[in-house]
Amino acid sequence: MKVIAVDFDGTLHEQGNPIQQSIDAVNKLFKNHDNFIVIYTARSYDEFFIVKKYLDKHNIKYHAIACEKLRATIYFDDRCAKFKEEEENKND
Image (tube, helix red, strand yellow):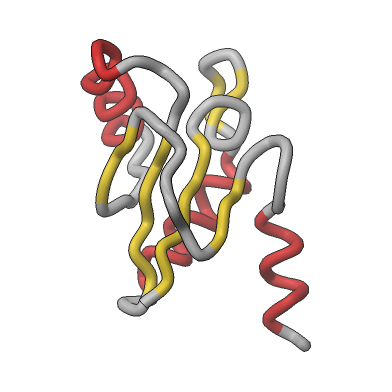
């Protein structure tokens, strides 16, 4: 099983606006039962339900939410791997 960590701020939304390409990529990864999707954020746990509400409102599929960076097989964030890079690696 792969643990795939996806950053919330700057990756799934920018200034409150959803980034649809990222959302579509997360939802596609979620369909693979070998993937465990964790949405992570540097926000405090006081904002956990704000993040959850946003994810649910925009139909972003996930297995868990973490208010910290965690161990994962793959990280997607605005400073690291992009979803496009993951798709390109599948063809190797």
